[in-house]
Image 1 (cartoon, one colour):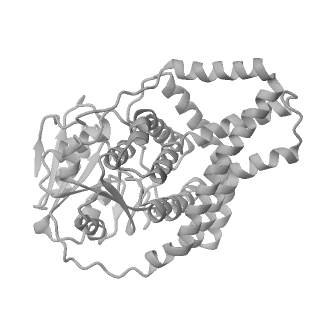
Image 2 (cartoon, one colour):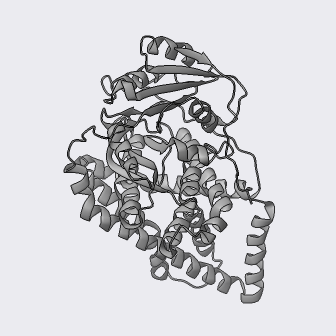
Length: 457
């Protein structure tokens, strides 16, 4: 059933002002020049090296703690989890924002049809977000005869990107729980039951499931991204849940309580990472996010370096914006303990650390060029070790916990050059953010890779 609707008025009730401004960058440059004038260039670079080492040390310990938690408990939760009994049956609305998704529309609808949840309690809303490739017409045809599915057509120029499309659907949703998938996602049949069971706890406002890259055999890049997802979901996200009960709502294969979302004013249409933004707003209001490692779906990994850069730039730009907007609120929060504030601050800074890594690269290049203090290669080793040891510790544990095939370990080598690309992307995002350069939500292009035929287009 196709329905054409007007843009929704459902927007965040209050959005903190983005505090990015050119003076931020000028302040850093001014501080560097002041230190150079007071201490001399050599001592200033040495001081910067010490500070960077301390930052890396703190994040290294965080990586190790998450890896230890994953080794200890994740295999039990992942492989010894019993079947979910459908004894708690809230009404559920699945939301999927679709912009030019003709390549994946068929697999998307088939995945939604296969969901194992009572049809009397399930509603699926697809939002054709002003597509120009026939996505809307294709969704209309594919969902014809599915009484629990509707296609909403969003007019061109409505704005807000994915957040705007989701807000449009949320305004019409009948479910008590809203479950969100991206258009390239194919969930396991029991995902909804595994996600919604956590809402029996009244404190829980959102739940995140685990995403797996399904086209990992398509290229070296997608294999590397698949390994990165092992680390991100089986170690990092799991560690935040196990140690702090502060996992992140990830924006896809996730669920949110409809009443809580409406109280918060919906998804933030001014953010390009609406998921991270919503995570912070939930915990700042006293709610909780939960992570379920057994609620699994698959998605496409970026198939080209250009798509990888575009996707990671969006993640970095939005995550860094969240830091600028919510850092003060986190530190002043009465709902978070001191340790929870520390972890939340570190979570908000995770896309700043690669930018700091770019600074260390600059320091190293200065040293190679003969500028800077007389530091030997061996004295620089702690800096290099901390730079890579933490993330690679998580990667190794992710491979072990995820029971990845042996050949996957060789792909770890490709993550080193990929990390250099990532840190430069994060550095550019930071500079663009503090200079206030405009940026809007950008969709990652699909490849339509098929696990049955191994093809893409």
